[in-house]
Image (cartoon, rainbow, N blue to C red; front, side, top):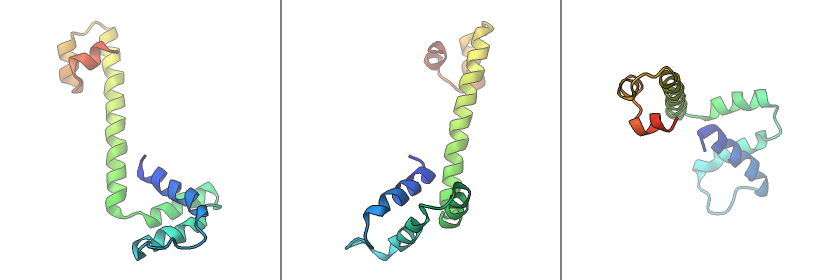
Length: 105
């Protein structure tokens, strides 16, 4: 679950709270306040999410998405190279994938 999904999971489940759950410290006050956004239109939810997430979380989320996109692109390229009968060792060097990953394509 990524950060966006995590926050919206909290938002969805927060309707189970009548108020701030007993024992929950002040760090979660923002989450409780955010729960009130569950009925916002989708366009407003993204704006609210951006206001709630720290720069560090935003960077980590972006890095995760970038890495996932790069892996997907490398798999696509490897499949194309393989269809052109490019030697597996060359594909591995060019994409950073293992020979086993390339064979499985």
